[in-house]
Length: 198
Length: 198
Image (cartoon, rainbow over all chains, first blue to last red):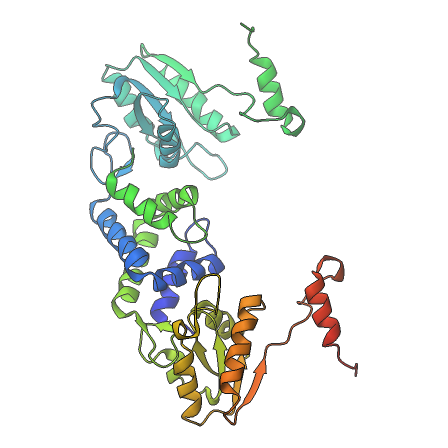
C-alpha cells in the first residue's frame, strides 16, 4: 500500500536489531513527517559513516579511521591490553571509561558447535602484539559463558610464555543482584571468590 | 569514544520512536558489521525516499508520489471516503485492506488544550472534496478519544448539508478483550450498541 520506496525503507529498518515490522513502520512515519529534523540528519550521518567506515588493522575495532580512535589516542596506556570477543564488547567496556589501556577484538569465540577454531579468530595477531613487547598486562574480558571461558583458557595458554601479567574480569554478584533471583553458577562463583571485609 | 561520525549516526537513530540510546548503539554496530547487507540497503532506501517524498495534495498522505498511490489507485472506490486524524491512521486502516475507498488525512484533532482549531486541520479541503460531488459515503474514523470524538462531531455538523451517508467506526469490545479487564467506558458503549443474535 505504501510506495515501493517506503516499503523498502521500512524493511531495511525492520532488519535492525531491536526493531520489528511495527516499530520500523512507526520510525518511517516519523522520518516522513520530520523530513528536515529527522530524515535529513539520519541520511547525512549514514552517508558519512558509510564513506569512512574501516576495520582497525591493529585491534579489529570498527571506526571511521584506521588505525581506530582508541589505538591512536595518546592518553591511553599502551602497556595494558584488554582482549574482547566482539566490537560491541569493546564499546561496552569503553563506555564505562574504567579501562585506560588499549583493546584487541577477537571477532568471536571458540565454539566446537559452530565450528569456530583458533585460526578463525584474531588470536595470532594478538600473540604478535604481545610478542612485539611493550605490554605489561593482558586482561581477558571474555563473556562469562562456557565458550567465552574456553576461549580465555586457550588464549591464556598461548600467552603463558610471554612476560606479561595475565588477568581476567571478576565473576560474582552483579550490582543490584538479589541472591534469590541469581542462578546457582553465579552464586557459586561469588562464594568461591569471597573476600575479607575491611 | 566512537568517532564523531558514528556518534552522530547513533544519535540520529536514537531519536526514532521505539529506539533509545542503547538500541540505537546496537543497531549501529549491526550496520557497521554488515556493511553490504544492512548499511548499504538502508542508505539506498533512505536516499530513494528522501528524494521523492511528497505530501499528497488531495488527501494529505505522505508518499513518494503526488497524488499518492492511494488516490491514484484505480481499483479503489472513489465514492467512499474515510477521514482519519493522522497518516499513521491511514496506514493502519489500509494495512487491514478492509476499506476499499479513499482517504482524507486531517493532520491532527481539535484540541482546546493544545490550541488546535478547525482551520489548523485539513477540514476545509475535506468539505471541498465532498462539495465537488461523486462521494456517497464518508466514514469518520477518528480515534476513540475525547478529542477524536469532538473532531468527529464537528466534522459531522459541517458535512450534514451534503447528500452523503455519514458513518463512524463501531465502538465496543476489541477482539480478545476480556470484560474483566476492560474500562467502564468501553463496556458502556458495547452494551449500548448491543445487537440481536442470529
